[in-house]
Image 1 (cartoon, rainbow, N blue to C red):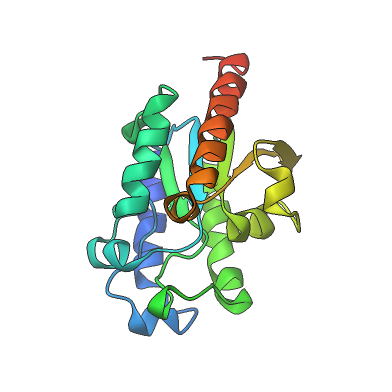
Image 2: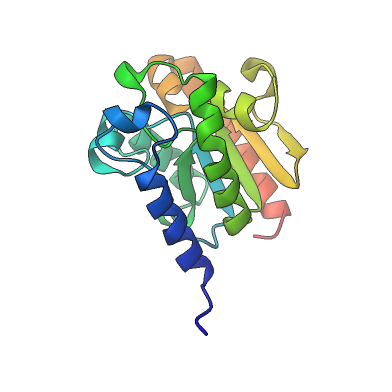
Length: 190
């Protein structure tokens, strides 16, 4: 009897996400964007939703925000290829509008399944939508750079790279937050 590996289970989940029709976004997307990275990643980064480039390619964080994110990761000794990157929503909202509660609720079970398969040391929540969806109703300006433990997961909160691109002050805050993340990961074993 064939036993599925974690990679097989994650790939099966990706196929399920690509075929999903649980919300109207499935009718307007070009590609679902399940996420990417190794199934044994110590760090999972969770954004808000795919943008135009992500919808076009089916890959998360490949536009300007993705370039900034890769740079922030590199500055703290992490490579994009060693982390798992995904979003709350797996399909792009029209005109990059904010996700609706019904869309978040349709996608969250997929995200929880991804997190359970990967079982990361740290889940980095990028922006207010990710924080509210996974860690609770916290104000980003007050909780960034902090850890929050809930549902057997450790969350690290920071801003979304898109905000840092619009506001240079937030980029400085994100750099400090990522340095705190690096220290936390070192204390947790490497």
